Length: 264
Image 1 (tube, rainbow, N blue to C red):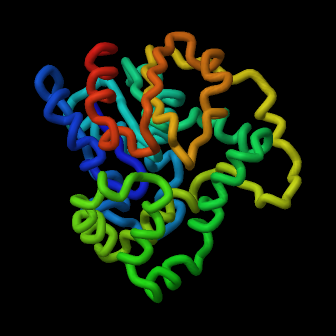
Image 2: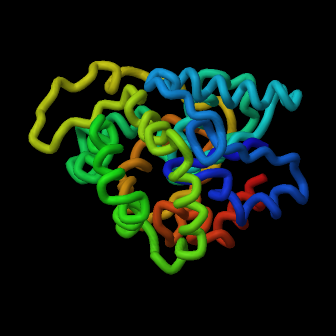
């Protein structure tokens, strides 16, 4: 199994799942490029989807994994979707945790005002002056500002020193934001009315492998509209809704572990 974390975390996203999964599986949980102590290429294009997918396949190849179960949360989920869509021959099973299918996510930028509003942070992350702003206010102040609206402070307080250490690594913040800057996802401003991309209304190939989706229903960044229409894109779907926020792997680890264990 390969477990992919998202923004703004590291392999520790999966700290409650790894011991359980390792009882029955060979588990890999890398720090993705740009995060923690992994390499941090400087160019925005180094974080393009093809590069991220390439990392997943290179890791699998290194360990001799021809086919594997792939799990992802947040940006790790986006990477997992992209890998499975483009290389269905390599991904035997897919586990997605609070990460929208790329087609549905782009659709909601045009069709769901609530999701567009909730996604305005992406426009902020793409601002080239963001790093200078963080340098001015300090990494810790930015950490508090980033997390306060998305998770119970008590649940991440013990991990705060770990986050601050990882975010303070040279080039880390720019690398993490470059995932958003390299993404082709269109996030219009609230007052914009851009042309709707034609591909959104064309047929999209369904997933060819079994998919488990675990969704924290109190997620403030990803609205429930991300689940509307998922059945048509994922014929072999198991959907488990959890009473938790975006960071469901450590907000509700027992529920996540139970869902994964039952499905596997």
